[in-house]
Image 1 (cartoon, helix red, strand yellow):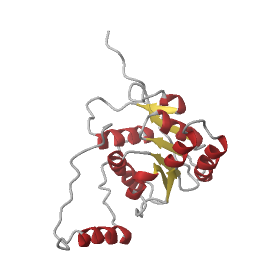
Image 2 (cartoon, one colour):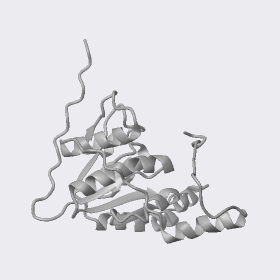
Image 3 (tube, helix red, strand yellow):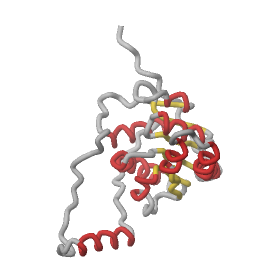
Image 4 (cartoon, helix red, strand yellow):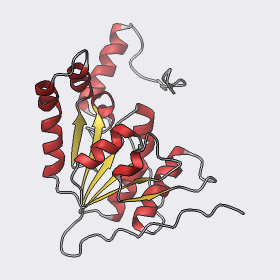
Length: 221
């Protein structure tokens, strides 16, 4: 007997009397945050007046901080939390590190929080967000029991292989309608240009004419 696919979740309906307030969660890593950007672009195209925020770790925040299609970038204090957990956990340090982040999330009063990551850490952040609806991956895509933190969940079809497509499939399941791919673009701020110019100058290289490739991944990946 063939196993049945999970029933499609009930679509989320945005409020009628005001723009929706949305939170995207993809804390890490650099490439995975990049693969989540088309979801942001599609949601912005769908809800141009929405409040859209993103929770991300400090080391990937630079991908988001120059974006005009985001209202707020909420930086998960990974380094401070790790320091507070080393050796004997320090409750005061943990509260200091995490309290401001949680308060910033809850101040958003989100209608929905969408977890693109689907592991224990992102699930705990999803729960702490206080969003009216917590939406994410279901089993077997959800890892480390993260599905327990969601109120509704979906599993992209196995035929949807690329991470960008899987993220869009999850967001489409939230809305109950297909979200098209919208090219996210990649804004470059003045600080980024200055850093790149300094690196090129210090290396004694010509000022222009470069294509930058990152062919590898982390040791974990």
